[in-house]
Image (cartoon, rainbow, N blue to C red):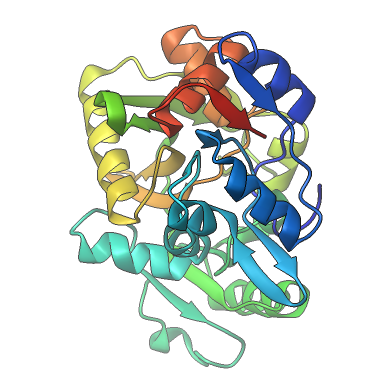
Length: 310
């Protein structure tokens, strides 16, 4: 469950119970080696409903989504290229920038790479995080910095503890949003479900989704009632999803600047299902429960509707 190759932690027995209500044949398949994977391919299920990114057999990585696509089997997640795009935050922002979509000014660095304040390409205040996809504990009160000394301390901390370069971007002080996306290409159905995330102020007085806020569920997730903002959020989120190569499901996080301009923050094409912003977006926008959400994901993932493997 804690492996890097697991993108979505699923309760496979619950998923089996839910999908069996509507589909003719749903089974759980345990993949322990490459032969197990080949056996799955021979069975040709209509859909593989899995949160696995890749398998590592004899030091060879086999990315599940790409392997299934090669054998013309539907699946619920994006391919390796898209997952790589959103995992590397710097690369994701470069793609978004190239697509002429808003994102905060940024650069990457490591200790001693920018030795003076005047050498920084972006002005204070700044927001700092590891270049590679962060865990909640990667964001804390020290992630927002207003001076060069604290900037240096945070860059050094990320380098020492995460073995990572640092993504440095303009700190956006406005509201934060998460936009869930489900794209059912076979039926030309697109669900774009924005929610606002209201974090409590941390010890420094900033409303950011840091580790303490997420760990203790201190943030509030609410409806986006302003029609103009909903439209702008939906447009930026979907265009970001497309630019990064997303398939079927994903979330796009967006932050507002002090003057009300929306900016792409990051994307996640393997979002958590359990009590996550992804699930809460269904509940708040469509009044859907967990079971209904799972059906929507399964429907979006495939064209045929009989055999499903989990």
